[in-house]
Image (cartoon, rainbow, N blue to C red; front, side, top):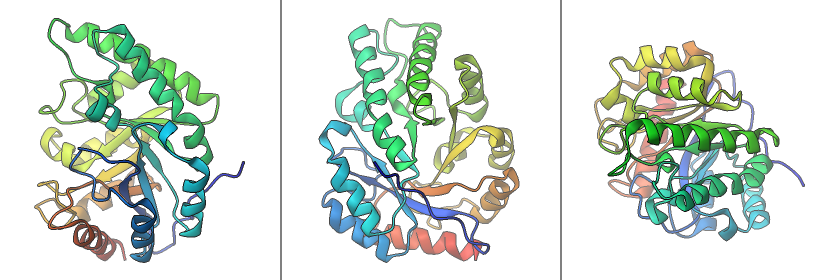
Length: 283
């Protein structure tokens, strides 16, 4: 079974750029592309993106062979697989008080491992970790998340797959809002294949210093999301992406920078403007 590998970064542009693409219908708004997979991949490739981050609710609903053929035909790498739709569409989470729901969430992440291994992609753990639900203490929810992540990481590590934990702002979950809290959870899980995803939208809300938090995350930084302060495409809000990219470069990170933003004013315009803005800063 062949694996798809990202293209090497060029000397001029140290970052490869990707955008989130859902393989299935989804309610989550900050995904620019949903619907016709083949048509969307063709457009993204034509705009000269280097890859696509795949948002996949359930890998059992994906024809992996056909998907890989499409990706190869368009020369698009897949740096990461997002799992958040299992929370958004099905309410699966690591911190649910029902052990059957927690087990389903763990098994869902483990089911992503074969495709992640084939694509050389990290598996993102965002809102799949859940929230602190009524009747559950923070300490109990935290312990459940630690146990779930440890089991998922052990399963993924055997296939050479890494997991990326995404700090998310306080309005969406109380479980890991900052890089510091993410590093604390990573230390608690204590497996070598768990790292961080840094998202500029969430960081703009939670981090006292985006540049300082990037520096703190450096050794465990596995993936990067970009959206502006208003969750529109880069260049549509007040975030200083030149400073952000300089700080990112200082960490030594050479992976993908992936657009996860609202499809406004429309998906095609958002994707092209976001790409143009980032390319103008690194060229």
